[in-house]
Length: 133
Image (cartoon, rainbow, N blue to C red):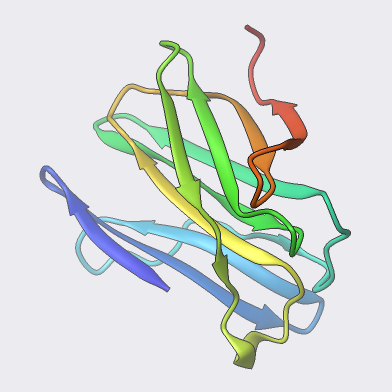
């Protein structure tokens, strides 16, 4: 679905169907296989968000997930107070998933403190604290 490089770290974000629904995973490092799987039901309720954040030593933090169809932007606030906004994208049709997808790479050492979902008009639809403020 997406791949890139951050400094010396190569990464790949994958999302695919499984017998139980779908799986999202990050593979970090040359030739690496995804470490674990976050996923679930193929349907996502309107106005909701399913978010995962993976961080590690000597690598950036990956924030990714799914959001309802009306979510245009996911705003991520880091533990340092920095805010990054990422536009959602339509899930590939062959996955048969409802909702939209998002993926963001935060700088090494940054932690995702919270995420907010925003409508096309910019209204906040939902807020999730990932770590205590």
